[in-house]
Length: 85
Image (cartoon, rainbow, N blue to C red; front, side, top):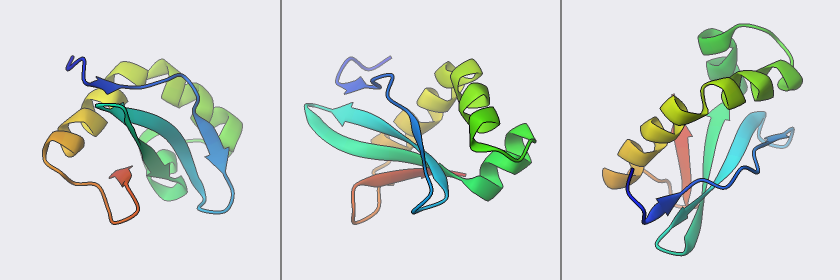
């Protein structure tokens, strides 16, 4: 893992964007990683934020690797969000 990219354990469900969001620190700057509701349902099944949070925590290492690859490829949007699909 690249030590310049860190993933604090502060994931949360945000109704405003209908996504599970998690902070990402890149060389001290904060980005937001996110996975939309439809993507969560497709990947992990279920239909509740609580279930998707549990699935995220179980798959944390793999999902962080996906986010890290997107960050290395500079795939964040104009708001500093990295969307896993």
